[in-house]
Length: 389
Image (cartoon, rainbow, N blue to C red; front, side, top):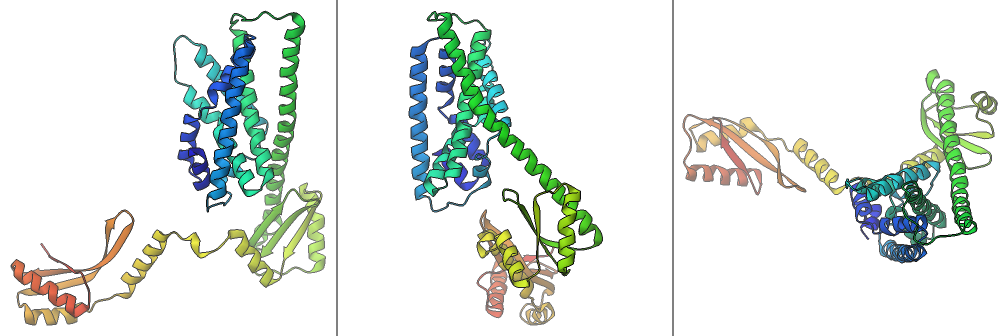
């Protein structure tokens, strides 16, 4: 539940907290330990506990995201839907650290770090989000990452147990030992090969986007042509690069030449689309930046209103001074302006503040009279007055 809320509100701190209180690490390490000493009863109990925890986590997160009114795809959710070889390295070496820490006589405190690095619960809850929203690409991607973390923490624990030569609970014949090693090798292959492909795709996409930047800089920016809209569709065939410009318009011949120039920048199998229709371009830009009124928080709106109020409310200090001198002859000079006061952390208010100069200070009753007069004169509910020291 904590992980689901953290993912929903895109809070990194809450997600880290969920990693630390996650109940998943124990059964995974237990499974690796049971496999290492051939204690199949321990292995069976660990896998059962892991299965129960996984089903409960998936069920709770699915229910939460189904009833939650906020179903926007946040960055914390997106980051857990495309695993690659780097996630395998993190899970494996994180698992090694955890296994070493558990087996040492001198107990350290690396387990919280391992829990944060390997991140078991967030991808499981992301899978729940995928089910709740019907996005099965998210579901399979997140479950694949979850499976990677579970398998490789388990395997790394197995290796540490073997390296430290823990006594075997049940002696297996050579054929059974080979079978265990065969299963482990098969699992490693099944999970490593797709992750290598995903890592290669990630590398190719980043390389492609770098070449896009080089192309746009040399062909447009360096020539003083301002780009106001840019969108890349890497997964299409052919790939698509959409551009929109502030004022420059291109002829069909120029667009054709630019498409041919793409090959000079290693941008093969790419189609350049230039948005030149003002209406369509405006619509695309608005969609791209997702502009709407809710983008401003309530606090931002409050601050803008306060600034507007401060700027529009000007006081005629000279006229007010002349009137005040008639009523209170001891006043020599005044200055009155709006000031913003914090009522609490989330609330601000604008109050007129009068600073007066006089030879001697007024009595409390006279100050009250000045305040009441100003409230009536300026039609304000609240006014602060102070004497210049």
